[in-house]
Image (cartoon, rainbow, N blue to C red):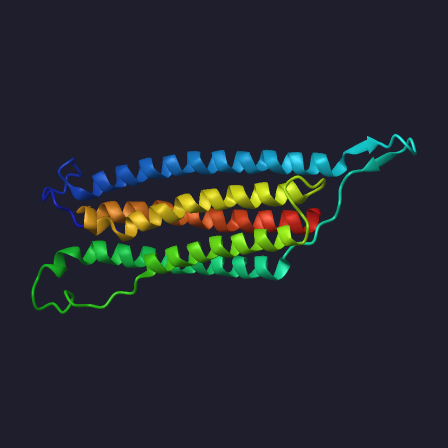
Amino acid sequence: VHPPEIGGGGGRDPGDGSPDYERRLQRARIGLICGVVSVSMLFIILTAVFFARQTSVVLDSQTHRYIRMWIPIVLPVHLLLWNTVILLCSSVTLEFARRQVARDMVLAPLRTIVGTGMEGRVRAPWLLMTTALGITFLFGQWLAWTQFRALGFRSSTVGPSPFFYVLTGAHAIHLTVGILILLYAATASLFHKAIEHKRIVVEVTRWYWHFMGVLWVYVFALLWFGQ
């Protein structure tokens, strides 16, 4: 769905709204791809180090045998599963938010017309709901770290324990970036931003958010089955 043409000529020149919107969206998508590739490379490197440490052995000075310094861990599985459900639900609410913003952009000219019945229409705060779910996920991760530490697994413990903090911490940091962008999109009207600008932000952020969801499932599976 394209925004209404405002140039009037239909010649797809800079005076029209749709070409400018498409160019800005294309640039934003290119930036997103670069960011996703960078984040993916980071986690690929962490995964390689994870498996390298998992298969590494050291020479025991007493028995003169090679032993593995890989101590199995006990993950707070139930809490992590709840966090996974929360993050996946946030992807659903963000899709509803994207559809709502797209509909608002198409119907924006009609909202200025009195008597159309659209000026007082109640709208669900999908962006704020997504943001709240994201913050809830981060809080759940903090609880998981607390529970994991209470079991005696610290960042200095030999084995997969440091990777639990590094992988989940890196994911939490990148998810926080998405939360900040969602907050900006939710309050874009306060900064007098056009609806086209808000839709570009939401369109790009939703792919980043979905990527964060898939990445978390990957991290969870790596820690669960790789321990």
